[in-house]
Length: 242
Image (cartoon, rainbow, N blue to C red; front, side):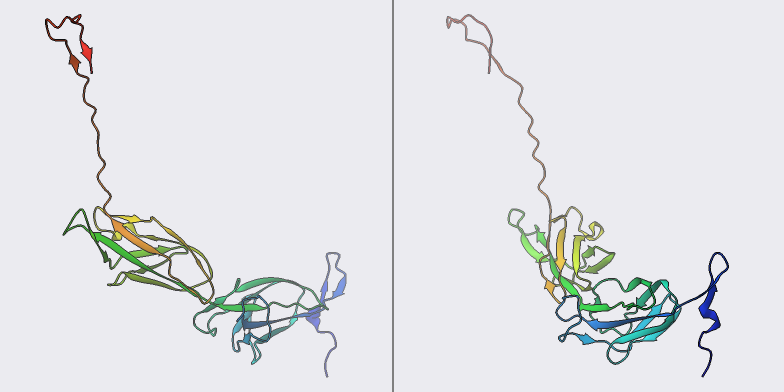
């Protein structure tokens, strides 16, 4: 019911000789990796109606089983990108949301996208109150401290001193307090925290304390004193240094 060979399936090589272009297909799966093993198995769950793009030009939706398919794809390098729009909240791709495939005819050209839960970091900021007793300051929660994290993320401590960084892709994050939000004369202890975020887990390690560092003690050495033996003591009268 039509031509066996489509006109666009025929091209010419560098010598002008016609050759037949064999079309290929690209398939894949978008799923929630429940056990974080990087493979789709019985414990995982497929995600339907996720937008998947080929070369940012052609878009398809995953079906009820989480599968997508591109047909009549020319051989060569192609970019496959999945969107997070229809992925449940609190999930991110376990790797990159964009893959590059070297597509070949007569073979399986597949690109799967695993999705995993995000993690979060909870912490607290306190300050030492020296107003009542400078020798024995009281520790109190500190609000409105800006917490900076790797990747341009930030948040602020609340009235009780607690702060939360949520929807974090698993990985390592360095946290520190923005110096611009510190009271005058105070410093942060420790200066930073390195926290590892795991999928679906909450890390409660960071505890920042604001303190006023002690003033340095400057020791001025006393000049040497010259002592003389009293007259008539029978000493030689030579000065003695102490």
